[in-house]
Amino acid sequence: MNDSVFRTRSLGVPATGLPDQYADGKAAKVWQHYIGGHKQRTEAYQEFFCGVLRKHKLKRILDVACGTGVDSVMLLENGFEMTSVDASDKMLKHALRIRWSRRKEPAFDNWVIEEGNWLSLSDADFDTPDNGFDAIICLGNSFAHLPDSSGDLSTQRTAITNFKDQLRPGGWLFIDHRNYDAIIDTGKAPQRNLYYNSGCIEDIKTSLLLVDGKPSMLTLDYTVDPSKADGDFAEEGSEPNVKKQKSESKPQEVSKFRLSYCPHRLAPFSNLLKEVFSDKATHTVYGDFKPLGEVENPAYYVHVIQKPESDRNGMNGEQ
Image (cartoon, helix red, strand yellow):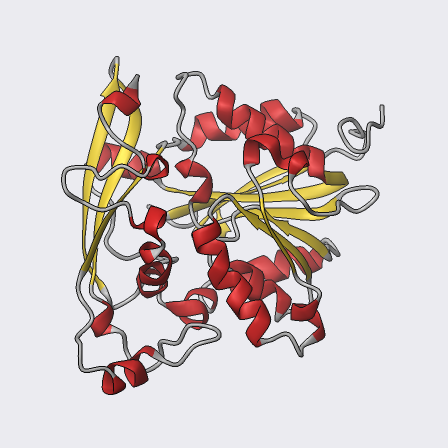
């Protein structure tokens, strides 16, 4: 099994001396420096996601990869109703802090945040609208954290089926992943890209595990220096980083952490989505938020796929 060779973050076991900072809660804060802070992150793609959601008149959104809340906050600020889940309580505590700090705003006061596992999503403690959510978002390359331990994508198939079951007929799934085709072919992940362009990024080292000649796990070793945050950086619900540095005598240390991913190539992942949603589903792929083919070598792909209006199975036991 591949996890006997490479250790993923979810096991909470240090790998070659690098701490699993998600397990102890440190990476949640460092991650904000990697992605560039809430404002810096969302400005790059707010127009795309909000534009598509509004085009299809989608209002009630389930964020299945909430993390520290960056995408949910973006959508709340743009008038969408959010339910947000994540499997990591260490990450969610940052989203909860944001909700508390902005609780006087009705949108944030009504923001539902719960723990939730993709493989048992129906067991999570949140209320699903009668017909299902208008849209589900799974962004930030989050889905690739789910390992393909069996080698046949059955785990991924289960998770995507659970996403589909939470959607109303005619609802939409937005799910993204890095351009793993390019990373596998070149052997190197880009240090900065459209999503993550923080000045705090020092280095990203790429390792690829092959099982029977097939890419099975991609491991990225990150080096992030929080002291390089510029004056525009600020976490929601906290002081700007620069102000903190002035008030603290102890310098912020460079952080090293490791994350592992299932490296989905574009074609097989597209086929998996169509398999779950059916060939009748409307499916569009964007490269760096442009129609596929306009950007020669995009850093990210975004899949937008619609649950057929005729598909009423799985929601509230309907047949």
